[in-house]
Length: 325
Image (cartoon, rainbow, N blue to C red):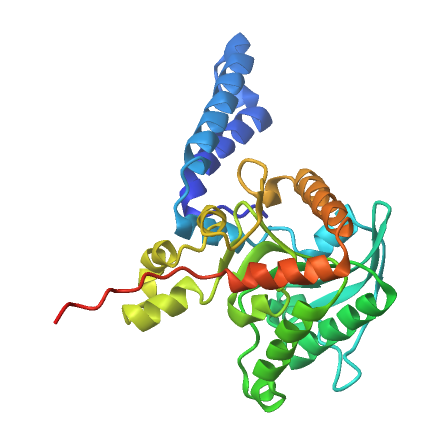
């Protein structure tokens, strides 16, 4: 079943008309002009797609990042990596399937790849908690990262979560402490670390996998301290002001790159990553390889100094000068 977002409706209408022409040509008295009409509609679809996707609003990009057909972590793992061998459990409480990770091969590079994973249907979403990890998910990720550091394997994280799970059980098992430890430890690992935001990058749940030498973001992904709906509920007391919040938060790939919060924007096919997984995965793979090869040329101490300086430089502010007495 195809899923169209509100702003994609003009394209969807043209596609329906095109499919109708192809399936039932006998009902249209176009005769020899049928092929010509099909070509004209195809041209209109392409023009409409370019028009819409060349000027998306921040809220429309958030909608694309949440598209139900958008590729998830395991889609990229299966397409861009080889020989993936998943590891389970945090050795403390359990195995949180909202986070997946294990050994993999990225061309000639042996790596540990870790990412947040959503589900495609209700059953899988319940099993994976809609991609919102519990404390044991972050502790599992930390266990794998420590393993990578021990054996000198680069770490690659793929981020796609609305945020860490805020439930009572997660609080009882110290979700904030688990994320905080990840932030501290990721700053100290000597191996190269690359993080890529592939969909939603929400709050501390995303940052718990986001401390890296290089932070990449897909063109239609977002990375934010809070969801647009959460921000709207706080500032405007109205969650329907989410579109206004998305613009104010500066959460799109372009805004984040201009602010120096991400290192590179990974382009997506026209219409979004879900329109061509193979092309998106190949593009992401090439960017990961480029950054990994650059990082491997540095010594461990150089990477640590650069990583520290990178995150210390985050944030911009203006000091107000005191008024003369």
